[in-house]
Image 1 (cartoon, rainbow, N blue to C red):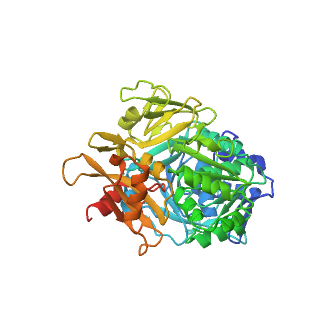
Image 2 (image 1 turned 135 degrees about the vertical axis):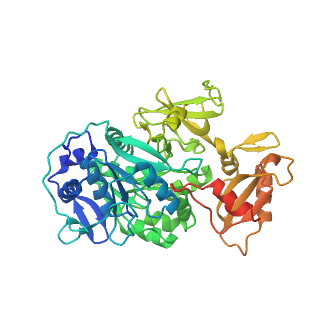
Image 3 (image 1 turned 180 degrees about the horizontal axis):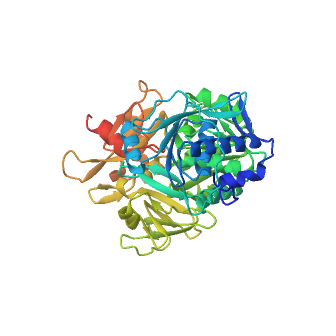
Length: 503
């Protein structure tokens, strides 16, 4: 087992080794910090006894549960590299990740299927005895202490990016600890913080809130996946949560609820973070008005360089069309296609660098050379920085719509339109011009609140009032749902593939 040092998250938790403060809560199970640390150490010892060596890859394929937290920290404690995978990931993605990482072991929940051709074990925490057991009955073993360099890889986190092909983002122990410390300090987490986890811990957005809460000595509350607006409101009202992170789809579920019910359910919340995809200024303003006692933040970042830019909406209510300014220690440049830095308010590609920047992509040297140069990450996102240092996102280069020479990003259209009456969700995407005259034409893919009562003509009327002619969608499709990427972002290419070809 590795030597526990404050330079790693597991080592930092040792500072709370004797604490009886609650660290993790889910259903009827509550683990104190002392119990969590014992579980991590004993599980790490079991992994070593099963042959897991330093730098081995260990897949953790679990839903949000206490076992997920224990398995990840135990893998790191054993010196292994954790490879978190959402259990709902498709089989093709799963095969791709396994082929790239060649893990020695996969840890799953008790009721989950095993992976073919990989040693797979089920992990379960006995709620009465507060002990962790693998299904095959492995017991804790005493193993020698090993030194763990802080630049050793702690995680390989896979992200689809713009191509849909899974690429593994490498994060070290030092980077994980820096992110946890930075978030906890920026958002003011302390021992009284109760973090409600609503998104998958297999994704960086979910796990980093877990890590930041544990770093601060707060309590991680794991909720069942909300199936409806009512479920979400009940969860928020009944768990005593003082903060949570939400992607836009969950935010829009809240906005679809009566304002007074949202205010009541979130009365105890002190800090709320929104990220993973764009939200409009109208949506932000509406939400902020419902939670006057909470500080609401928006962040921009990638798995490769997370939480790089943060907006405090309470402090800057006139900047809601932006995603804020760089977090402490983070630098931003806006460059043209030749790499030349652009002046304020000029749109170009966003470059990022900071302490949390990935060490590179797992076994993809060509991609490393393409995306990372001299400590800067080429994000593939486009935006502009104003004179005060606030970043406005334009969109991903791959999403750029070229309509007869008019080039613009779908995000620009969505920001201009804002929230629309009678629409639950919508997105804009470029579709090849069926007439062959224009390179692309904009289409709108709309999920109405009531499909029987909603009319595309009403949408187009609002669009013509708010947009220049070349941005007005040429087609409005009513769809049952919007496809999402594994990280919860609206997937424009998948929407076009699913719906445009049959329209």
